[in-house]
Length: 230
Image (tube, rainbow, N blue to C red):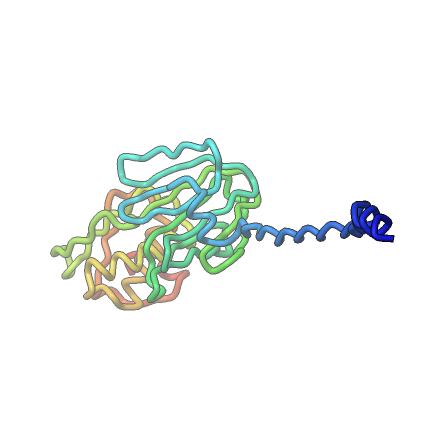
């Protein structure tokens, strides 16, 4: 009996029941960055700079060129995203141009595209998308100078527009008036603004646009008939 018990104790122990493998943890899904996020556009875009203002343009391989007047140009494909500097907005206008405005909604810079029928779509307050392949023309300067002087009849403000502003657009209209008033606060009257817009439309190649505060504020047709100097 004792021998049987000893022999029984030397036998193999109970076989352990195999445990099923622990299920592997499912990896958390990786968040995909939204390509229209202004931060993403700024991080991945090509800088397009004029003066102290820089747009970010998502156009891999594109190289901006700088004009002598401080404006910048860039050829880009359809679908290109553009973002304003942080703290500013980039607003697409109805004529296919756009303006950069600061936190107070003041004009900071303007953008035009060629061909003129290329369109911009507002994606976010800071981001627009170019729907067609085009050449961008970007500038922070609409007015090179605005100097008061005396002319026949009284005071006269000689405005020298930039080459970009001479082309004419909704963006340039906004930029011209904002920078004229910034340089010559006394010019801030409806009649002076009407003369300025008339010169932009009717005398874009004139060396300086002479605006006189003493001239009457007349309607558009009369303003054009009088060659912007009623």
